[in-house]
Length: 235
Image (cartoon, rainbow, N blue to C red; front, side, top):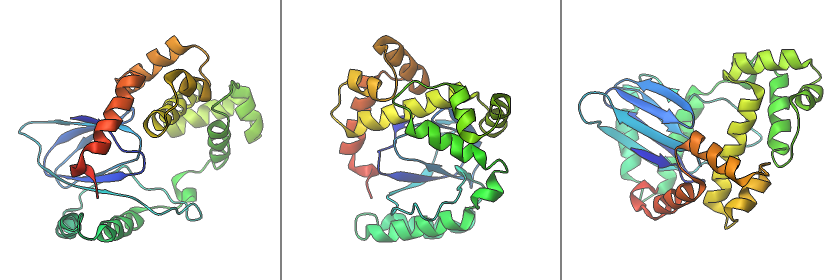
């Protein structure tokens, strides 16, 4: 199954057997008792390994908590002890959505870690912030390094260690992520979206987004419209 997670909604899925899960460009092997957090606006998929997959899911929104930044893992390993409360929260989706949000918030807070514990190289946050704020224009890796106050080779090594990709690959991922958000939440044309995230060649933009998401920009927008109309994903 493949889908694009609605832009303002998160989803938790509790798996009861082995599965292969994809979130954006990252892939995880999931065992029975594992839970996966799917972030908003992200192309996602899961595939059966063995018999047909059985799972419980919960879709929810989170309040704005920018002043409280923590790191939460995409995969929460072996949490069968939360299943009963997970199902109770799920059963209240249409009655009291706040119950779902409270459960999700408490669960995610319980497995969260501080930013400093997650990453030793704090200057990467500065580099990532620079990239996020400059997606609409062309800039060099050297500019990112200068902003962080480190040599370019150091920046390259840090990105490979932390993200497993080059700085340029990371920038492309961020541009495609922002493109997905714009396609799903605005009426901008594909050409306007491409320009807004720094692509001046529409053909190159179409090819890149297809390579990253498996869908063309128009297909991605259409899949988002289907998700918004599918009430079973709503909380």
